[in-house]
Image 1: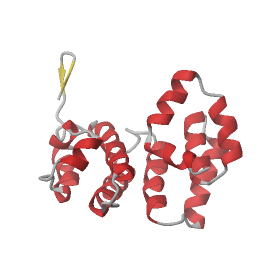
Image 2 (image 1 turned 135 degrees about the vertical axis):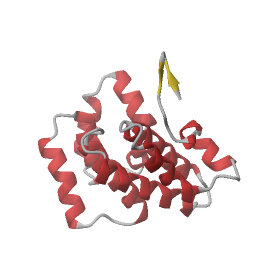
Image 3 (image 1 turned 180 degrees about the vertical axis):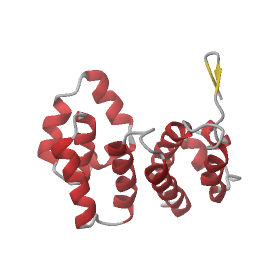
Image 4 (image 1 turned 90 degrees about the vertical axis):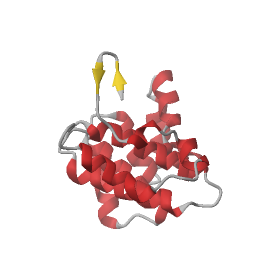
Length: 170
């Protein structure tokens, strides 16, 4: 992948959009996480792109009418790997929120998971992280207040994230 004059090594799956995950029939979901692991020794910033690709997987899953479990399973593995291995390359709060939003698509969050989110709502300096944590905690009144504190551009951006799915359920 090339950005400007810089060439960055990334997974071949990074070329896919969320629609591609739904429309292409020849995607081997079992190889996605390995494609990132292979690149890691050559590009330790692969986690940023992996995080973007994780969001595309979640968007694809949410749009799938048939609840494609291979997409959610892959998203969960990727989110866990980013959380465990990224060493602050991607913000921990973002990593935990992304991992827990995958889990919330599978089941209700447990007390330990809720405590991690509550900690973010109390200590984060990032309003978007607080908003995401409150959505996952189903604190919709607080989430609405935080959402209204965002600029128009931030609101539009937030609406494009897969976590916004939980807003529409509020």
